[in-house]
Image 1 (cartoon, one colour):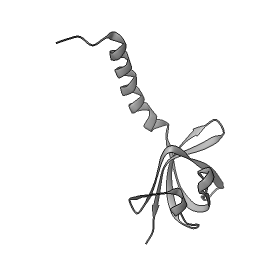
Image 2 (image 1 turned 120 degrees about the vertical axis):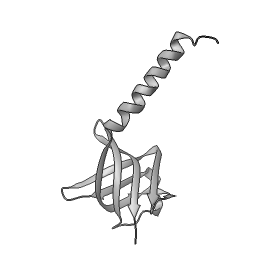
Image 3 (image 1 turned 90 degrees about the horizontal axis):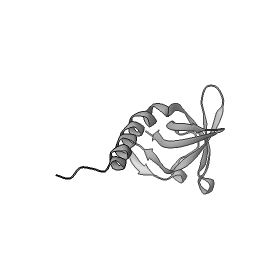
Image 4 (image 1 turned 45 degrees about the horizontal axis):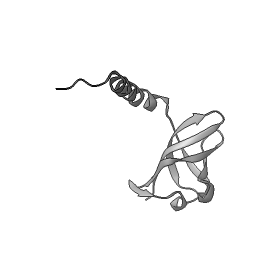
Amino acid sequence: MRALPKCLIGLLAITILLSLVLPILASEIHGTIASVNPEKREFVLADDFKPMKFQLAKDGMVLINGQPRTLGDLRLGDEATVVFEQQEQRFIARVVHCTRP
């Protein structure tokens, strides 16, 4: 069996480390959809404290009742939970979970 090159082993180690650390860096918030701008991939979520403006990540997902949807499918007043990361002064949404009756 051939030995893996050292750089490949190092890359594998970094990948494993990032897969363990990145979920810890993500935050979660629950609130109500206050506005949606699909063209800019932006939406505002209002919680008990103040409205927060999010940008949906390029690889971000919107799930409505567990089904994949688009940002434009969100409605004002929808209850949603957002998994996000803060990058400098911006909030980047990774997953938007919305439930409707």
